[in-house]
Amino acid sequence: MSKPKVVIIILQYNNSQDTIRCLNSVKELDYPNYNILVVDNASSLHYLNSTRLFIENEKKGKPATYGSTDSPSKDYSLLTTHYNSGYAGGNNLGIKKALKNGADYFFILNPDTTVEKNSLTNLVEVGESDPQIGILGPKINEGNRTIYGGKIEWLKPKLQHSELPTTNYQLPTTFYIPGAAMLIKKEVIKKIGLLDERYFLYFEDADYCVLARKADYELVIVPEARVDHAVSTSTNQLGSALLLRYHFRNAHLFNLKNGPWYVKLALPFWSFFIIIKQLIKLALGRNTQISKAILSGVLDFYKNNLGKIET
Image (cartoon, rainbow, N blue to C red; front, side, top):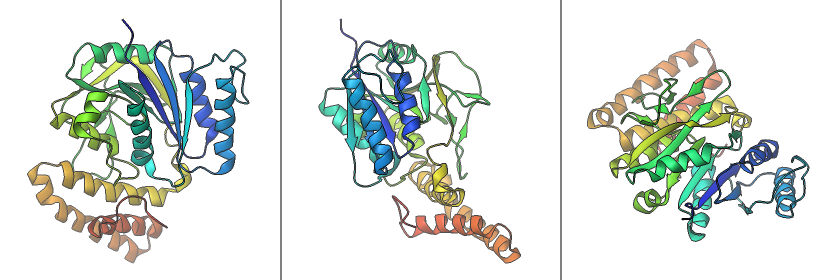
């Protein structure tokens, strides 16, 4: 019996060196039925051409600029966009294309990850063992720690990762699969739809996991699968102030959309506390750029300024 078809989706925004490093690990996977789709999210021409050259050479079975000398041919494709639509928007384009090509699973990978050889095989085997499992994740090595999923904490501007080691593990309802490496079943996509593009960056993965749970799917971490993640190399170029603006805006959207009733009731009071705290810091002249970014994030939410923040 043939194995389910997996499409590996790698979203690139500049930093083609990271993407190519990821591709060099992906092409060594021992799983027998997968395709590779790189979605370029409006990178500059230099980075786009570097990845395109690598893929073209891989299709020809030749070693590429950043590739190893024994690179086997794989089924690669490159999808380019003319506008940076963020994590959700770019991955959604890849998912739509993969659906048309008959994918059974969608393995979303950050470009700044590398994957161990048997990871996809282990993930799919666990996924196939139970139809109620909807989204799976590997353990993720972040250099100074290894994480096993993420923890949702209401009324907080950031989500926390969990370092609690585990065996094949159905995650508690307060946990989610980090979007750096998540394997999603086709049935989940068909039932709950695509990632919410209003976030643009941050919280989309947790949001999608909450929706999957509401649709009665289970989330599972498979520690026999391992992914290494160079944390934040794909977002550092945006700057810390802008990232904080996304964090605070999207935390509000996430809490309003997914929080229990008491969280939704408390949300305006949380906003008021944040605003007063940052105004005091501004009055004292402390970290004014950061305080302005946080205030802008809160105001973006209330002004319905969602999606990509134009600066």
